[in-house]
Amino acid sequence: MRSVPVAAVVLALLAAAVGGPLLAPHDPTGVVAAAWQAPGPGHPLGTDGLGRDVWSRVLAGGRDLVATAAVAAVAASAVGVAGGLVAGWAGRIADQALTGAADLLLAVPSLLLALVVAVAVPGRAAVVVATVCGGAPLTLRVVRDAVHDVRHAGYVEAARARGERPASVLVREVLPAMRGLVAADLGLRLVIAVQIASALGLLGFGAAPPAPDWALMLRENMPGVAANPAAVAAPAAALGLVTVTLALAVQTAARHDGGPR
Image 1 (cartoon, rainbow, N blue to C red):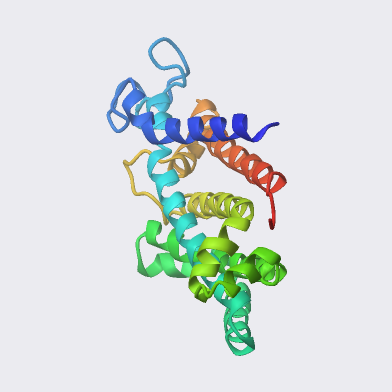
Image 2: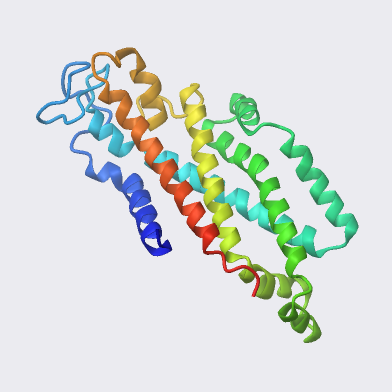
């Protein structure tokens, strides 16, 4: 699949997730019919245990989750890229200090860290902290190795010969050469952030009722899965679609990485 169609699909999916509440035919938190009503006219996915329209809640349930995951992914990627640039360009002491700190953070499982943090702070903050602490070290490692590969390239040496400062060389010469790598890494952090946010929601550390949220819907609707399977299948499918599409985008970005000039 070409990168442009994949990017279009990803953007359309994210736009649908963010703008879904505007398309909801009913109030996602309002009672509109009997509990656990099967799919039918007016309610294509039936109702949940409180009689709320499942279709409206699915449309509204991805905005906060995707927004939280996006913030977490951007933060993790930014911290990791900055650390990797410094580690790959600076001297041995800075390299060892940064990579050593990254290795210590990598020893802590992200989900375990998220659960610990979620006890003290809101679930969304826990998602951001866990994604940054778990993802930034991986990004740092990857970017640091990439910097080592290009730091003696001709265009980098030419910039240094012109007297450009290290920060300018990193931002204007080295970073653009790794744009595909950084884009793929950002997508991967987004996938992981969605997974962490979903896991926290399923365990009760995410959005609070009656907020529409895909992970919360899975948790709330499991008792009535026999009466209305769509109440569980629909948010599960939405989560799966978002995750798979983002993973596909990551693969595409990595495949089209131009690499060093």
